Length: 194
Image 1 (cartoon, helix red, strand yellow):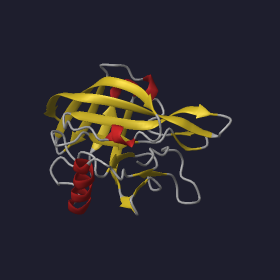
Image 2 (cartoon, helix red, strand yellow; image 1 turned 45 degrees about the vertical axis):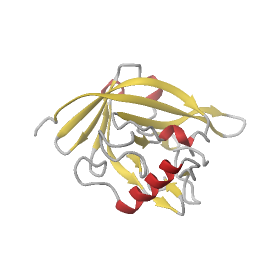
Image 3 (cartoon, helix red, strand yellow; image 1 turned 90 degrees about the horizontal axis):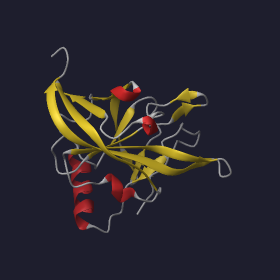
């Protein structure tokens, strides 16, 4: 299994990466291979969509985090939210959609998920795509170890997962855990202005 690398400011060496699991589970390996080859669907796909978390005043565009040499490449991710290719690609699909975002973009510059830790159970997360708002309610919030990549693959398309870094280790000079927020789809409605 790989690791959930920290989504922090890009480094000169090309930035942090997330390792796509080499999954001992056959369904995950097969799904990841098929989805990476097919790409995201047009209707309701994360490309061109937005993610909003009203309780922390976050509203950001979503960009696809591509795979290069078996790794999710976070180097081009800055103030956007990244959709992790090979996770769910639309609400109601086979898997939960998983998104990643920075805590900081650069020294003193906040990332889109800086305040994710301030969210509470029941807070809304809105996935806006194709003229529809998919409204999720936060059901769980917990820290995981960087090697818990399987936590990003939930066989429930009614779920949405957010991940960012947490627990800064001053001695090591890095984040030692990852914060995962899991939300469940509770309703849909037309997006404002549609």
